[in-house]
Image 1 (tube, rainbow, N blue to C red):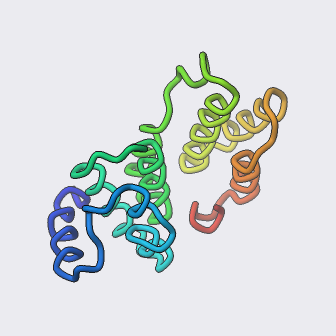
Image 2: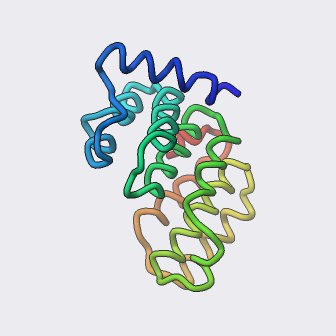
Length: 160
């Protein structure tokens, strides 16, 4: 698989250049001025995703949830939908919907809605938006789902 086979060369490349390191704490690694976010800002989404994957495999991040989500986003931006969904699905469980507070429940719907967009399942995304509007307060994640729902037929990168 591309991701696994390229992880070693990616790690070596960035370590050789002394430009990125996997030894940063998560706050630094996940900051706007470092590492995967710099790659993302330069539209190097696969490289950004692979760097996050490598960090997840070699470090012990405090917030794996966040990094898995961003990894999924990077793969989605790169049109690697299967990998995007793999990492998105690591950020929630059905228990969020059943037992979670409002934040957990809306996160569940946000992830499911994002996956529905990637799967080109308009009916499911519209149902999720309808449920959210009727049960939970609006927030930026709901606005993102509404924006995705208005942009069928274009990539996640363009719609996001």
